Length: 132
Image 1 (cartoon, one colour):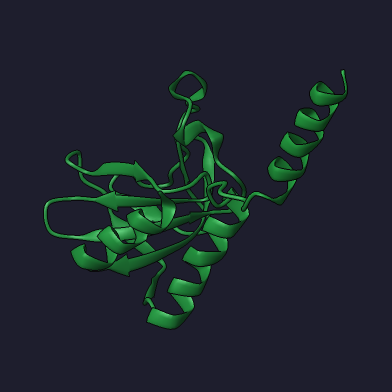
Image 2 (tube, helix red, strand yellow):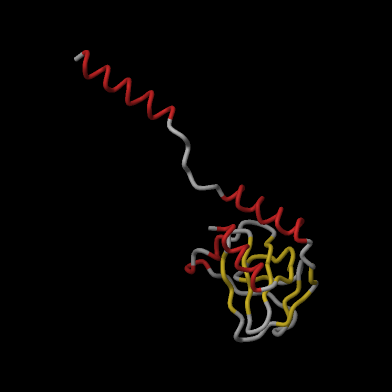
């Protein structure tokens, strides 16, 4: 019994002293992307042209990359957009014009767009890496 308690106590002490190896949480990822936007001084766009070949890639629940053949944009949503992850809860998009997406007016997958930033292909890859 004493050996059992000693082993349990030692395991508990080692477990508590072990380094925390958890992945960064969503807040840390969002803060890293926000810092990247400020440091890189990404140009903010009021609106962008939307084509049928446009593809949306989730970075976090707050940020996504919108790609078409030539251009890349970082989309920042007003709130956490769980619809990016869960395809079962997709809501209709609200747009004034079907070929233009406007910041602070339109939605993607039911989530209001707060800001749109123009990024290069290399910057888009860096931002995706920040979200992983």
